[in-house]
Length: 444
Image (cartoon, rainbow, N blue to C red; front, side):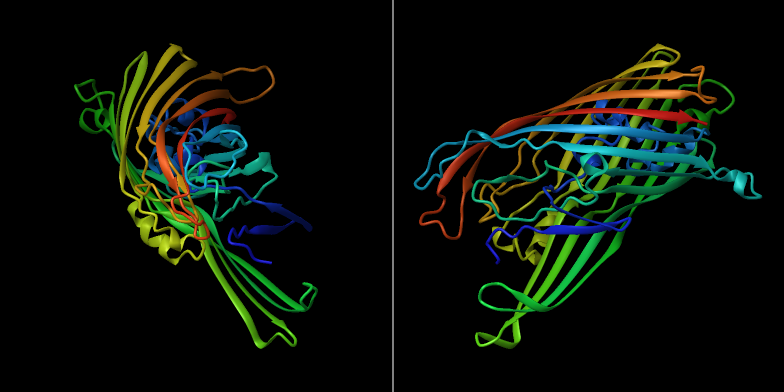
């Protein structure tokens, strides 16, 4: 049976075990919504362009070349949402059970590795390889996906996050100038179902085929250390200054479903065919530039990020679930600023702030009823590195990060095709998000 709110369930075969689960997702990923590793979360992503950890494969792959050491990283991330829809009344306002619309957390486990591949070749020019992967529900949910209409409303960017997977590399080009390339990998799935059924819903002669293929989108990064470039053998005015530039191409998770059924005596062959094509977890094209100053006791950086959400307006026209919503999006600029204090040679405190305007221009999105807000993001965290632990042969690094999102109030008008009057309700969307993350990194 089909309803106006079509929810997609996935069955995944993993090590011979079939898992089935409903997925609650959003138009985002952990890299854009929160941050990949604790340093990214604590700095509100302001210092992410100048971090040589494995998260550089997403933020700035060229910065993998800034640290010769290899890394093995394990991390956990939990984002707790308190997203509210407060009814302001209307001609047909539904009875809501409280103001909290969404409070399900996002819980990721992450693993990453970085290594120098020079020893595998006969060349002396260094080449660095890194990857990072994140899985929801602490490793128990491989692919979160939800595409649905909603009478009570739904938030655009927050919710459980899909599989996060990045793979890339970097190499020095010239003194102080490094370049990097990586790939953001998402999944596009296709399902075909053919069956014969009776009016009671009993099926026979079923045929089901499911295919999933990776969608690979590029990320390019370039970093310039002006001190190494202009005065490599001595201190000068350019010492400590770095700039970075990154382009990330848009990506999404898409599913297409084709179902054909016949009901003898009611719907004869060739039967009734249903076609559904929908996307979720959309990340827009991103252009970002950042500058950092590295001193003896601190480093400070600012970044300006352009997200080209306007492309999503056309993308949703081919989405059979959301095409009637007529949702309009705009490109946005996100300023970020971050600071790291060195409280000792191996202990650092990180903080950052960012302001993000909503890319959603529409206050009405028929049947879908999307909410999105302007928001302030602030973060705080610390990192510590231990050269000698008494157990491990290599240095160990611990990182912890906290981030808080302040969602500013915004009014939306609720509309639905079957409602006797539209808009049938006006709501105020607001809320907050608390993000906690920790990671352990072995340096080798």
